[in-house]
Length: 470
Image (cartoon, helix red, strand yellow):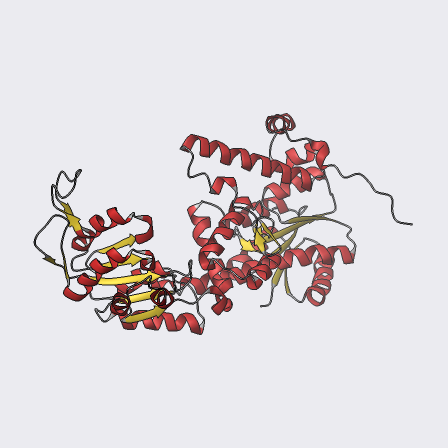
């Protein structure tokens, strides 16, 4: 994909010099504008990937141009340049959304190196927009994402089995999207106007699962003070999804076998059976045939379940979908968390393509969620996602605080954010508190107060000058 750069400078010689230098060295196409007003017109009529703009120009200056660009094109990469380089001006440009700041006169090799990084950001954003567009075209199957041949076969199978009323058994590893497939089957079936009832079988104790599925009559047991309608009755004329059915006991298997054979249930404590019109969709990550050999699963029940088998592929079986899935998940969670859209850095994408993904898409979703929460720029790096080598770090505390009261969980999350944010800021500025305060928009005293509150010392981030090797 060719990158287009717009150079904005009021000096004709500088525009021509940059055009002649950048096109061959960066492999891009350069458009030029002599003023901010002309630049805005070009941006209205053309797709541009990066803007390199001078700050000191007659009429509209570069900072005003930057502000208008970021208002109308928030994802556009903008690099500012000026012959009047001052740290305050650089900070102001960065605060307004500039990607980088370059002072004139500049060394050619240094300029190209800085712009290569900016161009790489533009390429990533362009690629992510393409991937996002592709992922948006695959949402017809209840957020199942992927354009590979393997996933296309899954979509075809879903549409095929949805047109029948037979029992479906969805198999596959954890995190492959079996629950999404069950909802897609219901959505494409003739029962789509009826209820869809999902039951996570292993999370319900056996004695409670039976009463939940089939209901009970008043007086059936000690605390049965009134009649209860079972989930099969609630799913009448619709579909019931029995998730992880490989983990249910032989007793429940026997009772479900009757439902599959007779299409009727008997609530606990009742002497009469009740007919139900329900389509059963089940799932498991277990090898049920192996469990049958070990006498841990009823063979007759398995064959009643396995009328229409549908196997979900692991992420390792369709690695070519990883970029599109990652883009979809980033868009989904950035929107949920009210964060600006982010892209995946080349290092992180390389890691994604090489990982084993034992937890499949669910594991990827957790890694991306970590990255979005910890990323302070628009590029998610392996460090942001908590990845070292092939193994992610432990889930951050704020993602495992569900067992805490809301107030305590919120306090823990804020503490971790402040520690990570301030530490990253000081590391980037080698412990310079004044510079760090300017970049994050705080007064120096305010930043020092936060540092004292969380026990952060500036000297821990200062790098001593080491003598060069002789």
